[in-house]
Length: 103
Image 1: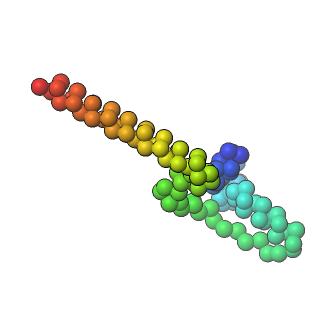
Image 2 (image 1 turned 135 degrees about the horizontal axis):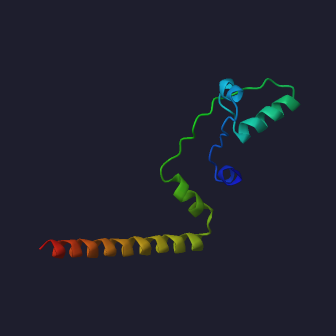
């Protein structure tokens, strides 16, 4: 669960008993922390329903690259380009093999 929290995923715990299931969805760790802070400040506790976070498709892949130095970022890009190129070559050879086996 700690790894999920570090990666930014929403953490929702399953209800153990029937009473907990009837009480509604459980709060994730971030919401529980906000509620604790509100209680300490004697503020009203606002409960939000657990809504899954919407992320942009490439955001998860781009985030580590943004945090890299320029040198490491360029190296990573070149590595990804090489991997992509090798995969294309493999796919091309598989297509050739498939074509020759059909005849």
